[in-house]
Length: 579
Ligand code: HEM
Image 1 (cartoon, rainbow, N blue to C red):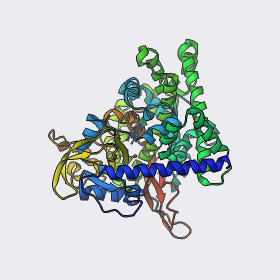
Image 2: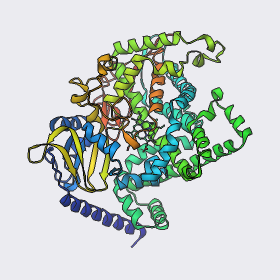
Image 3: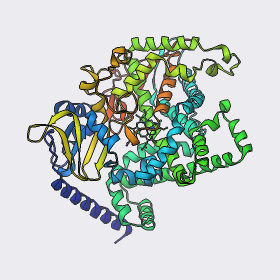
Image 4: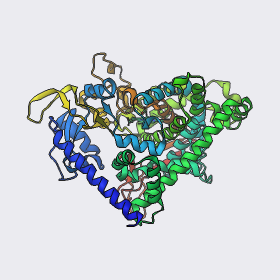
């Protein structure tokens, strides 16, 4: 038997084993809450809910409430949860019982190393303790000039594509993705990625851009990783990966797997080099000096990594993170902060294009604030510096804040997440649901190893919390002072009582960074560019209609016949406002 065949048979055996395990756990766990009928004998309800199932995800919660039984693969049953008290219990009160799944943790460990999304328990707690202060408001304030430089470059590129008078249609998605990559590379790693410069060929930057899509293509392997890591030692795991990657099996899956391995190797060696450079800079004062002068504005040492390294060096031995853990954080931050933020900025621009009157009001608010910028910038090197808002001015613009909050609420970049129980338990409900037998219940018993889906979208669209217009994009709801009812039921989210950035000890550590970035991009682009939905017919007379496809992320595509309904793109009509 050849090695590729051996690997093929091993994978098959492991898969059958895994399915048997699932079947056994299905027998043991019967969920006592109501839910939709099974729609497919082996896919259950998964296809209708999680393959482009935005509306279906909302319907299921609206029909059955905040705790619903749904049918997963091969008869397995999952709990689909969006009730506020249940989410508080799961994410804030008892997170050690409702943990990330084995496959999530082991895959992340293999791909990123020992970063926040690959660790559990005490190690995760220690890492959060070290990293949380790094993302403080005062550090964001220091970081803003780095983000502003990137946003200004983005604007210059878009403006350079616009004629003086007419509007032009342009796919802005690749540019938003490149600018997010530059923000996270410059802001988090202190690495000058220059992704917005398309002539710049940088293997490391390309690898960072490709890591998310490449992981998505290999999700099929994910359930097998914990089994392989449990059975095989590190030596044999490496051998298996080598065989898989050198084998010439002509399947797409093998090609995707090989590509992922290539990307991980480049990401790992690039991040290692940056870490060594930063550690050397920290140890040598002359290196620090040269480092602070080699990027625009001399702001390089204010990046998150430099702050993290300084904090780590000055912390006590038991609290200190190892080099492996620091490296893991670098890889994780880029992954966690890239596509999430790109999707949010893209959605905000799209919503503003769809609501021109709100776009005009927001533009006026931003321009008024810029007119107030004190003359301290009269010595500024260029326009990018002379119109820069301070951190406080940027974050306190009421309409900008409302637009960003409403976009985060209605279209969370990560619509659903999963958890698995480590022991038999139960959780309380704010709003009672029907049991599988029809009576009203307000506590849901949960078996050990039960899989749960945390529905961020259902929580953020919950009419009981946000009102009957919960699914409308209405920034004014954040400007209405009557929102502040102290006794109102709220979600436990770290940001604005919504679940977009989750709650509890595994909530998003970078939400202030994401909020600052999206606000800065809008504040930089809007004074100079007017955005509208595409309206010009193509050669066949079809106008491009944008559709947001829900997978792991929400991705804009163009519907047929003007588009293929698959390729990620966001064509917007843009017009220059001033010369
Ligand atoms: C709109 C943008 C973003 C959204 C919607 C978002 C959302 C989330 C969510 C829902 C989680 C929880 C994931 C889970 O439990 O499986 C998370 C975790 C995380 N996010 Fe974000 N995120 C965004 C931007 C960022 C940025 C810019 C960074 C870093 C610069 C970042 C770093 C992280 C990290 C490190 C974690 C893991 C935290 C932990 O496990 O302790 N995120 N994010």
